[in-house]
Image (cartoon, rainbow, N blue to C red; front, side):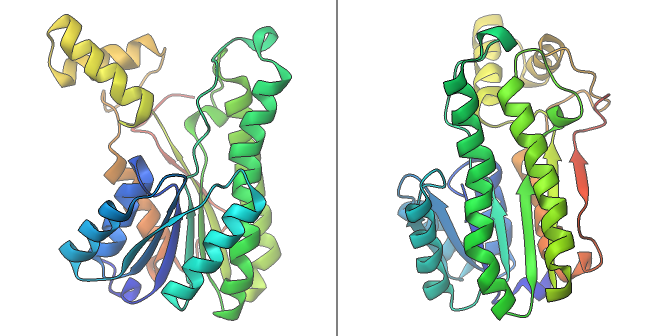
Length: 264
């Protein structure tokens, strides 16, 4: 538990599913006040968390790929939360064609850069003034395992995630004297999105257990994971909550791998 998070205002961009939603739940369980920003309305999810943990959880529609949209959403979040002490950027890449380098078009590169890199830039740029007014706070961005072990079919994605890691370190250096910390978490293969779909397909078509399906998924991806399983969103979210809390008060500019012991 993180008692210092109680009554603190935290924004999660991309908080309606996966790692973002798991983070929202952990923060709510610690009585933080949470604003979930997502492209689609998530009022029912927010209401459920608010009722379950007896704290303020609100849903705000905002798109990090659009400057005015995310700025307006963060302004609304600041008004509802009254005070902001943390930002988590889990904004996802819109589904794109996965291909090798020569088949990756300019549109593929631009879409990845705009949703991941510029999406993170826009969120941080909008929140930092509020953190400065609050005498500091914590920013947690989302990198990926693939930034240190690129795959031959994830060129735009991996490059964009590497840029986010660099951006995060720069933010830590630039705003540390204002009491603002910035850290980047880098999950390995986690049970969200496509990975969840792969597991479901394997268990259905091969009639194998979920544990066996996880091992097959890891093998098919060409990865060597020491723990021999996929990560859970809640496991990544626990690390994010730690980085938002005062227990990590001297950690800034860090790149935290959460990958179950995946080889480089």
